[in-house]
Length: 115
Length: 112
Image (cartoon, rainbow over all chains, first blue to last red; front, side):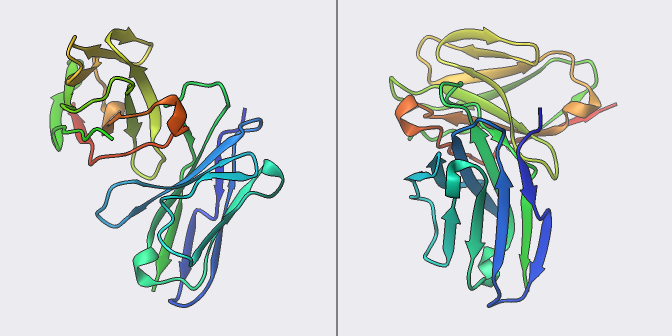
């Protein structure tokens, strides 16, 4: 069974540009999460989808970040316009409804570098 | 959410048992204790979760005393491939929907 996949693995953009990160969760997982680690900091929660609905977006830093999950399958996280402080690794994770609450399956992350 | 405190780093040798202790003095009644492992350039990976006493799986054991103010992750006979960062997380309850709060973690280095 395929795990959580993220694309691209690494993106380098200039300040002010737009980047879209994609996450494909494990098939059948209704819960999808975005996390990120910026340089030297801890991994931080961004938001949580249940199917196509945003269950919790309390971690989204500002309105430059837009997450979508149309159709309840894959998700995208768009950063527009990107700022230097957005550099870091963005992780996507998924979990099956009814699964162990604390057991999230993470992807390998998308590294974003903003110059 | 309960704050956790764990050692920043630990060193061990191959074949040894490693115990990583996490303090969580203000753990709430409904909180579970969850441990994750993260290798460089990978996402975190779930290891084990427990509520009280002892939990064991094929990877590790988790010991939780009666007061639940601390927990110990035990890795039996570590190998070089166990070199990773280990995170202790507290506060994963059903109605939080799996929102995890990561701390700094413990960087375990296993030497030959």
